[in-house]
Amino acid sequence: MLIEMTIEGLMIDPVTNMPIVVLRDPAGDRVLPIWVGVFEANAIALQIENVQTPRPMTHDLLKSVLDGLDAQVRRVVVCDLRENTFYATIHVQAAGADHAIDARPSDAIALALRVHAPIFVDEAVIDGARHIESLPPGDVGRLQRWLEGLDEQELGKYKM
Image (cartoon, rainbow, N blue to C red; front, side, top):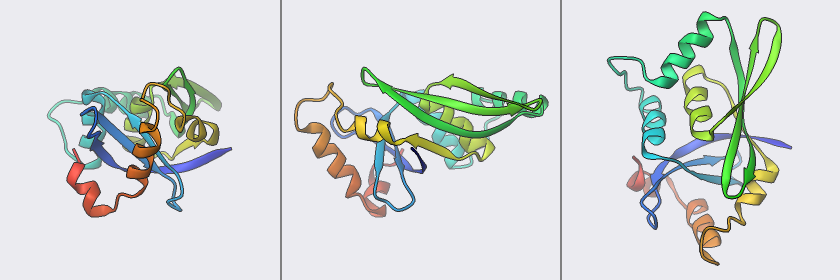
C-alpha cells in the first residue's frame, strides 16, 4: 500500500553529521528518515526555500526537458529498501503512455518539489526502515523515536 507523505524538513543526523530528508504522513503517524548526500540535500533545500540559481541545476534542467516534451510527473514513489539503500521511481505520463523511471529518492524528491508532484512511500519500505542493519542495535529505534518526537522548534534547530 502506498502512503502519501510530505517533507517534514531537512536536518543533520546528530550522530553521523549526514543530511536527512524527513518524510511524514499527513496524520503524523509515520516518519521516514532518508539519509542523503550533501549535494542532494542542497538541491532539495534550494527548492524548499524557493532560491533561484543563476543557471539551471540538474533537477531544473530535468523539469525543463519534461516540460519541453509535454510530459507530466504524476508522482514519485519511494518503492524499495534493499541492503540499506532506498530506491524510488518517478512516474511520468508522456505521449499518452505511462512510464516508471528508476531514481534515487533524493533526486525523485527534488524533482517532485519542482513539478509539484505528490510523494508516496510503500508501506513495506517504512516497515523495513525500522530494521536498518547498518546502525548498532538500538540506534534505529532511538533515532526513530527522536525523529517522531520533534516539534517545529526542534526541527528548526537542525534545519539545513
